[in-house]
Image 1 (cartoon, rainbow, N blue to C red):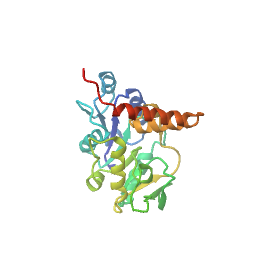
Image 2: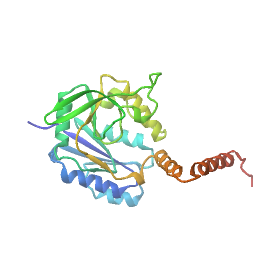
Image 3: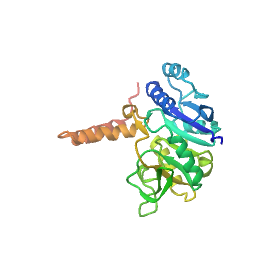
Image 4: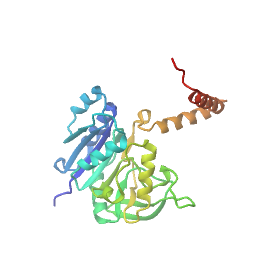
Amino acid sequence: MTLPKVSVLFLTFNRAHTLVATFESFVARIDYPRDRLEFILCDDASHEFHQAINRALDFDVKICARRNQGLGANTNKGLRAATGDFILQLQDDWLFVGEPDFLSVTIRALQANPDIGMIAFRARPNLAVASTRDVGSRQFDVLIPDFDNNGEVEHVGRGVYTDTPHVKRRNFHDIVGYYVEQIPMTEMELAMTRAVSTRPDMVVAVMRGPEVFRHIGDAYSFNPGARRARLIQRLATIPGGSALFALARAAKRAVSRRPARVR
C-alpha cells in the first residue's frame, strides 16, 4: 500500500546553524520513505551567508524571498507550494528526537479521525481534553480551547492552535484561513489561534508520550516579544530590577514624545 505524500515545510530566517541541525536530525532518524516526502525550504530573505549554507541542504523545493516579509508571508508561501496530502510544519530550531515511526503513526491517526485537522507534538497542559483516541500503541488527546467569559481567546497559550511542530491536512488552511501577513508575529499567531479555536469541524490533538521535537533556539527566537518577556522575568529576580525596568520604560516614552530637532 502506497503511503500518503507528506510535505515537510522548514521555515527559516538567518539561522542556518539551527536549520542544519533541524534538517539533519530529521533526515537521519525518520523512517518514512524518502520518495513519499517533499522537503520544502522557505527562507524569509536571510543574509547571503545563511543562504549559502542552506543551498547545500537536500531540499526538493527552495523558496527565498527577495525581502523580509515576516513569518506569516513566509509560511503562506511554503503552504501554497506544498503538494503533499499532509504537511509537517517546522520552524528552523526544532531538533527531531522522537521515534522514527512518529510520522507514520501520525498520518494513520489523521486518516482514522477525519475530524482532527492538526496533530501537535508539544504538551498543552493548560487546555482541557475532550477525548483520547488510540491509534495502535499511541494515544492522542483532542483539545478544547479555553475561552474567557466573553467567548474570546485572549492569548496564544489559551488556544488549541500552536506554531510549534505539527502535522496538518493539506486543506487545513483552506478551511480555517491562511496566516495574516504584514502584522507582528504575536498578533498573527493570535489571529490563527482564534480561527482554529472556533472551528468544531477541524479540531486539534496532541500526541501523548515521549518528546518528539526539542526546541534548541530560545536565544534566536523569531519573536522579539518573547525575548522581552524573558528579560522582564530575569529583571524581576534582581532586587530593584522591576523598578529599574519601569524607569527605563518611562524614559523611553519621554524621549519618543520629544519633538525632533530641525537642523
